Length: 412
Ligand code: HEM
Image (tube, rainbow, N blue to C red; front, side, top):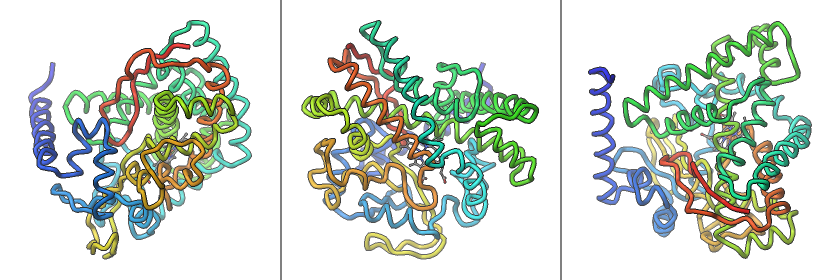
């Protein structure tokens, strides 16, 4: 039974969403990307915005960076931080996602502790395991003829990989997908009391999972990233609470986005049969295809920063403390950087200049791992399931920050 507080919260959240709907109808770009039809396909809106200024002001208050150069400038500026000057600490937010939501010096210290798990040597070491999981999943899928690309392939692959990296012994795909959905959706803010409860529950269950795992690794360390972090804890290089939130970040960041790289990639390839044909003819193009997918349909569409000094971007003066929303997905369609940006071309020479992995201090720590998973996945699909076809229209997730599908029925 919802409590009175739940109902009040619900009313407040829904009326906020209603207000942005009104702004969306009136043409406010930031409100539009949060509402249909623009949320389902924001690219025509981005194309119109690219014809105008690279940075625009939203009626909701923040500035919105559309152009590639403007996005990149803000991301790379050390004085543009994830926290507002004097703003609330991340612990007071919805769910604390460790160093993703911290600035130097904590960001620098915590990121350095996580970094060894993503060294080039480690990443290459994961290749055989990624290939093995891919083969296992595709064997099962091919035997069935029809399958759900997201549920049966794009999700279980990165879930298996990040679980192995973190040393999580029992993996429950459905449960992890629920965690990913709850935490991924919360990046847009919470819209209902029910969503808030689901989020708290997911965060609590993840915490319990890692509390058990940390105890286990204290007694019996392994080669995994959690064991390495437990050693850092014993050396007083981070606190127990920091270890828990970092494990949570690595788990969620590790699959919530890669699922959509694979899902969005297959959707784009099947909608552009000529490109799918090229990949089938030369599966060695898979690495380039991954870059083009990231540019063309970025799994993370939005992030944000607060300048901590007065800056100028895209010809606009931005006073210190103004929130700046960064449209990473729009940056990938900037015609000033990518000629004919709405054309999907897996051999595009400069596709890798996308900002799908962000830039600057928070540049995605897992980018090499995501690239490897994407490459192995797309290559294997092209080699093993050349007759792959959509069996129904895929179901789009109702989120703005995270862009992808929840269901995608295909046949082989
Ligand atoms: C296609 C897949 C992926 C995409 C599109 C992606 C995208 C991003 C983006 C955009 C950011 C930075 C957000 C910002 O600047 O505000 C980020 C940060 C991060 N990503 Fe990824 N990511 C992907 C896969 C992964 C994987 C597989 C991992 C592995 C654990 C991972 C771990 C992280 C971490 C730890 C951060 C925080 C970095 C920091 O704050 O210093 N990501 N990712």
